[in-house]
Image (cartoon, rainbow, N blue to C red; front, side):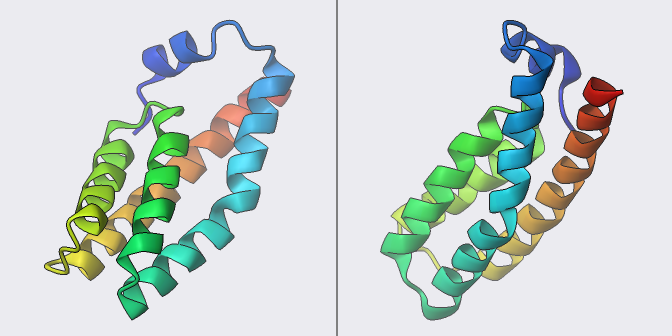
Length: 114
């Protein structure tokens, strides 16, 4: 769940249109990001998994959702350590949490554009 006070603080100097654009970019990249992560996990390409997980972690951090930030951090760490233990279940948790984040971001987007 997005920490709205921290989200508002993070984006306090941005115009509404820019925040909407950032949300739209995240949304437009979502499917490709998760497709790449899924593929990296499937073939155990830890180098690419590290790259994609780290990138996702950075993007998600902007939205101040502690659950998705922590899950993406853990995936990044597992990739870095080439740790297969619980990798699929962690990814599943991250995918679900990120789905919830997307819903919240769409609500924020609707608020900003109404």
